[in-house]
Length: 343
Image (cartoon, rainbow, N blue to C red; front, side):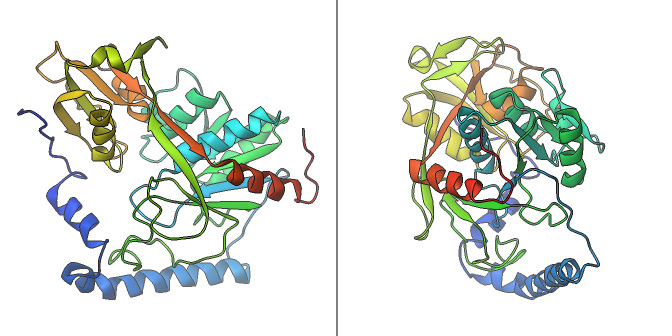
C-alpha cells in the first residue's frame, strides 16, 4: 500500500463518504433524500406519542440515571464524555455504574463487561469504558435490562450512566447530556437527508461540544488532545517522542479516522501507512500489514481488539476534558434530584 494509503471498507467507502459530505449542506443528494426524511420523522413522532400515551412503557430504576448521547448520526464523541463523567463522579466519591447496548457485538444477551471480556462479545466502547474507569459496565439490547442487572450485581451503585440512549425512551432518565462535535447539526435535516436522528433543538439538560470548534453557540466546551504517551498491551507507557522519525502504521476503526491520523501527524509522527476501517470493526478478518517491522499505532478504543491480532501495537489515548463549568452544572443538577444522596 502506498504511503498514507487508506484501506477501502464498506463503511469507509466513497459512497459512505459522499453521504457524510451531503449531510453538511442541502445539496442535490440531500434534496433527493428529503422525502424519505419526512417518513423517518413521522415514524419517530408516532413512537414518541406511543410513549406519551403509555402504550409503550418508560421504566425507571431507584437511582439517578444520566444519559449521554447525541442527536447526530456518525459519532459525536460521546464515549469520551461518558468516561469523563464517570471519572468525575468517582472522584467525588460516588459509586457509578454504566449501561450500554454494546453496539456491534456478536452477542445479544445481557452480561457484565469484565477485564477479560472479548470486545466482540460486549462491544468495543463498553470494553474501553470498563478498562479506563474500572466501573461496572453491563450491556443488553434493552438498556433497562442492563440497568436492572447492574443494580442487582452491584447494589451499592449510586448513579447509573447510560452510554448513548437519548432515543431509547424505555429507560427513564434524570439528566440528559447531548454531545455535538464540530459538525454541529450538519444541514439540519433528519435522516437520511441529513445527520439528525431527531429534530434539534430538543429539550435536554446539558449540551457539550466535544470538538475544537463548536458549530453553534450555547452549551459547554471541552478540550481534547492525544496523550503524550502511547500504551502497550501490558500497560507500559511509550513516549510518542521516541516514535518520531520512524515509519508508522496508523490504524483507526472510528467514525472519523482522519481526525485521529491528523492528530498523530500534528504530534510530529510519520505515518507511512494509514488504515481506515468501519466504526466498530470487529477485526476478525483483519490481517496485520505485510510491513511487519513497522510499529502499529491505533486508538485506545481499537486497541482492545487489535492487541488480539498484534500484541505489540501501541494505543494512543485521547485526553478529553470538559470545562469545569460543565461539571459544576452537572453536579448542581444531580444534587437537585429528589431522593439523591451525595457521597
